[in-house]
Image (cartoon, rainbow, N blue to C red):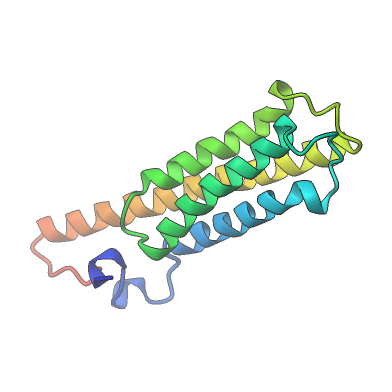
Length: 149
């Protein structure tokens, strides 16, 4: 992968880049995918809406976050989409039937906590990308050589 996908140079030394929140989103997605089994939600069938929702959101967010970790300059809207999916997880207990679970509290709390984490991390990752891009454009317009790549 070419270096144009990464921010490097003196202006990024010691600074957080969008890869950090994206990598944390990836870890949240891994947890979300295993949570129905680790926390024993106890739905009567594996195809229960909540189990399916958690695993589906985990796969999608995991793929989006991994892409952003590998190429933090590219596709900031992937982080926005992950934030939207996080908001969905927060609202899911109001929409889906969690009462069929043996442990409905575990499923609700897990989805709300992971959803809030994805919402915050996705917003932070996208905001960082858009701000760093704006700084590059401003430096370029001022005639300064861009040390952020």
